[in-house]
Length: 555
Image (cartoon, rainbow, N blue to C red; front, side, top):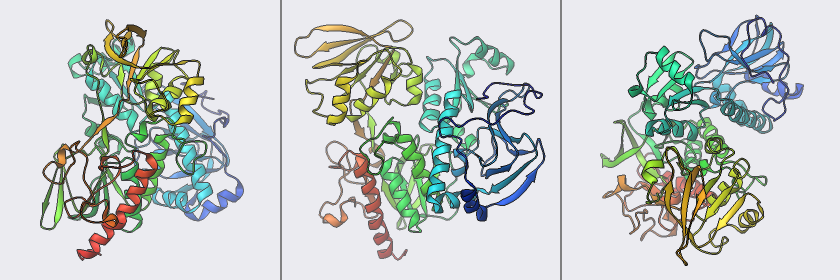
């Protein structure tokens, strides 16, 4: 598979890249005929650009004759890096094309080519209306995104592993499934050379380099999102029908349901789509996916679906306060933006709890994680790790990390792994040779010089202490509701979860104490903390939103 830099002469006639993973499937003649009404036939000369890195709202191309190569032009002074070569029947594109975001690669005609170009809006329509073809394309795009992330294609993030801002940028990119390459100033001599080349001082790091030319010095998450097209602008009219605050499974389900009903819909989230579920490596008990599905893929599919119906996503978009005026609501965001809506659905879920033990302040960020995704797995490959917690997220993380870590130690405060974890996961963990469970224990200290080297655990029954080797600590000990921005606006229970349906009957179970504000998913008091129930909450709540708008004369 050609993935290295090459001179122009070497690029002249590269062979087609074989499809070994499903990322580069070939469409049949029948499938191409089904797509034909959505696009335009074009003949492009050798060397023509189909799209360039950084382009937005570009279309999908089906190769009819000839070959197209996909490259990364990371170094403006050097040759491009070839990612793939596509021949007849293959389609050229990226997941960004279905989300209105910037693409991370460039496509160029390697020979004279005949292509079927399907414009951005028509591509979304084609994926939505032809289920089999749509699923094939979407699945290939998701696999390509994962493949690109593994190759370090996309952004370059240069910074120290000990910098909180470096960790913030890397976490933001990872949570939003943005492919990138990280260059550590502590170990990579080339990173220091790059800083000198751009005349950047150490106090201006971390930096983000886009397309080898654009340099952002310690950008905010919002600046990075705007560069990549992750954050859309709010609809121009004064107030949307519904603002969904939180883009986890509940919020995404509400967005799909609302937009499909013709309601103008804006979705806000402080970090990324997917919520906590988006960090899950494998969800195996969700209806319709017998082989399981990653939280990231579930989220990406939902975003494509919601955008198809016209939903707008403002990410990052962290709500700071909620106010009511003139019969509608105003959501003030932490970056100064403002969204007005006639109804609000709160789906902010919960935030991870932290450990307060000696050493946490030194190692949190570079060595302490609150999710186990491909990003974290790459960071601790071939090293021992420790996970604290006992729920399903712990079981999923343990099995996922055991693929690449040398040892996975799981620390729980009781003696029954099946108490808080699904039985199928507990049985897998007991049978996994690389996973070791420490019952009746708790983490009491993190140790190491410049990096985490070991974690001290204490037996809560015997007070015996032992040190376990670990280069990364995964803290999955539960969470607390993200509702501080709502204090004084809606009624909360003693733990900060939103009270719903009080005195309103079962039919209004998602209505809060403020008329027109609804709560769904994990943030709702008494909710079932499962993906399936959160999705159900989102779908049902929109029915109540619609009825509210009818009563208010908005429908």
